[in-house]
Length: 616
Image (cartoon, rainbow, N blue to C red):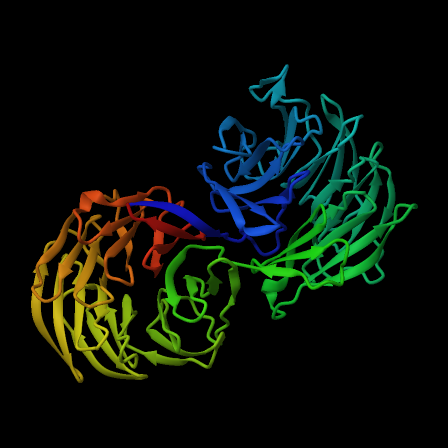
């Protein structure tokens, strides 16, 4: 057997309230760059399923930019490191520089691709640094070019004039826009026209002007060579909240801004240097804080906006009235996956902050399921008619599902925090809930039995007909119980694991079950004889987080903290497995088979990936 990657559903950019995010794009292609955790994501705006990831940063990445020729990408992280790597093929690392002592908030290439300026946080007065990356056609060691005095606090944005004579402009939390001449660069003057944090500064494509936008709701336009103020964005129909980001149109005649007032605006930059609103773009949403817009990019014919809640809107630059393409996804660890057997089949994914996203193979993002109780999710299971979730309190929530809409959920207090939950598929009223000291049986919304079992329960599963439950313990033992009404009776104890049980699953034909533990071992058992059917499944190098069966019960897949997915054929020795290495940066946390030959995985990188299993 072998495997190939069919599709990737991208994570959204990491966001933080009160901070803008700086997107960037390829000068010719419609690829954009953004960051989430340690990942730098390269997304094709013409095909949202065409996505690739660079995951070599040791710390969370903050910003990434293409070089002017599009061959290289420079990305910065919270440790103050800039990495330069190839934009294609193997993403080969060319160089790494320790630039600042704190996080990097913005970086820009010089138009000749020989220098980079980076800004952010640092110790003392070192908030900005420009350095040489290429000299005499060879990669340089990062020699500094100039001194950047004049800032007293974190520098949020920097820009390199795209034409000669070269200039660098910076802005930050000290309300100042600073202007430097060079190279070597030296301080020329400060512009003190803003009354709050200056969040973003950008030169026009021809270098004749630059614009700064601020949390004081204003945008100022300056002459590109001298930094003389020549105009500002009109207050008439202007933003009523902090402006977080600005981007120029390719012809330099318009700018796009986004703001905490939940709107994006396209401005015409007039001959006299002032800006007038041409169009206010409505980006939809529920009207909550998560709809604040914090990032934007004018990428060729696409206008891209990003909201605090991770919703990306793509407008057409040639037809601003056209409905935008809207898509979203997860920003944090995706902890569970479920397949709904609707037509077409859809995948539901959840992350702990309470987000439930629906995906369809071949299409990608198909919307978020909005629950009235938007609580955190620790355990999750779903069928066509109902979602059952539990969080970090004592409550289990049963939410009826009508098509794509969640109805009012019913909260059931089970008396202790649930550690695992499982629904009897053939009688879905019945749910078995593992709690620290035992198990709770739920019939509909009524707790019919709470059993203290005298050992620490770590995983649970109930058979589809609801007559049997298997509980896994901290001691590594599997205990099999029969269920009759509200009575639970112990039948057998199985001992094979050497670590706490993390997950147990029945095969779809119910002839087998599989279990896995924190000591990286999985076991497939024969249900009738209770003997081990497939052993030596010891190929992970860290704890196993999740496990899934193929619909035909012939394959079982495991996902681990070691970033790998391993797929076994239960009729062949464990050594004939398929290993998908590096499936998810930071570990695999969700697994589900979509059909007999394709499996979906999710992980800490907030991605969902679909893999095809190819039999030999």
